[in-house]
Image 1 (cartoon, rainbow, N blue to C red):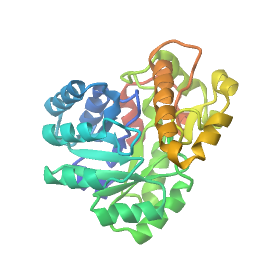
Image 2: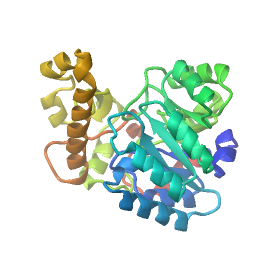
Image 3: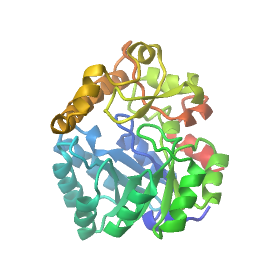
Image 4: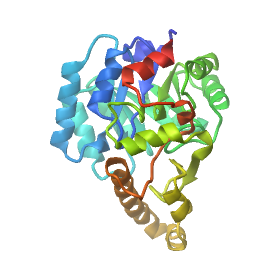
Length: 315
């Protein structure tokens, strides 16, 4: 399955193990690299810069031919650690950076100085064209079947739209849980795919067994959109707790969000509170189960090693 992503990241198969908040870790990425794909971790999964540096060193030591590793940066104001994270990644080195939720301009400029590729999350043509104009190396086309912060356009329509108007590689994100779905994305013109949710239920994932088992027990019809985590609509499993708290922002949040002066501060506070709640649900046994996932968990039937999940996707 040759595709432009193979050449860009020097990998055997055109697949990125998507960065997932709290879920992704070095063990998952090392197994991804061994299997011939790229693996990515959110920089926010590390509380301190020394922890981030240690992860980079571990991945560099474990890197094998045919695999690559990178980190995801939230580049808007909600991430107060952004500039320091970018500095560490550029100083220590990695194969690529994926940017999310903001302008990638500074990341592209700084990363390219040290030979790091930059791939950028987009959900529409306007932002994709901006990424290309800024010199981004590839576009992560986040469609309406993605987990977490997803787009509004179907996989096929988004891929075809971006391929028509952009010249850099288009990596489709969302809606892949089987080889047939992967092949479909490539047939639409995608230069590779980014796959996240199927890896939540991996042996190596850094979350509770309850979270992993939920990805086995629930399906596509159990995924709902919520504004209660980060302030930006996000997909979660519709557990009894999610049903209890609801998926819409509160009346007070709605009022404050309409105030131009307060809006960005409200978003930062909501992001911080939501991330703490999500972390507790992912790492501890709790009834407050807010588990982020996408509809591709429909195909997750058991908890498996990363290498087996990848094998099932490519053969």
